[in-house]
Amino acid sequence: MPSLSLSSAQTILATALDACRKGNFKPMAVVVLDERGAVRAAASEDGTSLKRFEIAHGKAYGALSLGIGSRSIFKRAKEQAFFIASATNVVGGALVPVPGGVLIRDGSGEVVGAVGISGDTSENDEAAALAGIAAAGLAGDPGAD
Image (cartoon, rainbow, N blue to C red; front, top):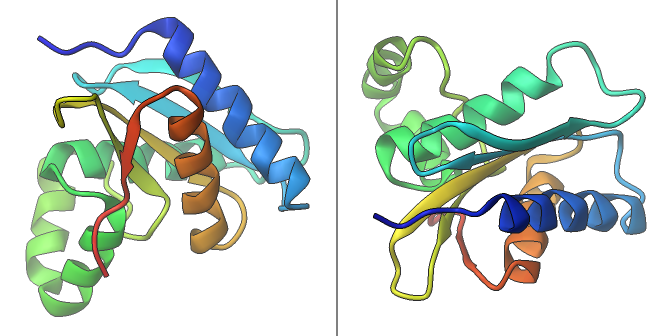
């Protein structure tokens, strides 16, 4: 079974936060999950709002739960709101259908985890996630428009 190492998760986290600071983004929360949905690394910067961790987690967990990046979930929410509402209920409310939840794929294309980031625009959240994943030598899958 594919696995996301702690070292890779920490690289993703550190690089994503570094990208946020270099981009002068608002304070961020970053959550890195393994393929089972377990938290491997997480951090909330000083100044993040109260529920940013839960939003970041919901972006990553939703991507893992549906097997698609949250950009695709966002598109589906606009086209099939009842499906996304039902799926959100099935996963216990932990599904945030906006960009910023990126699947992590290994060299063979297998999903080994997901990153969720929240705090700035969805596009900036997603860009930071992709930077972190690339730094770990893995492939990010944000979903399609």
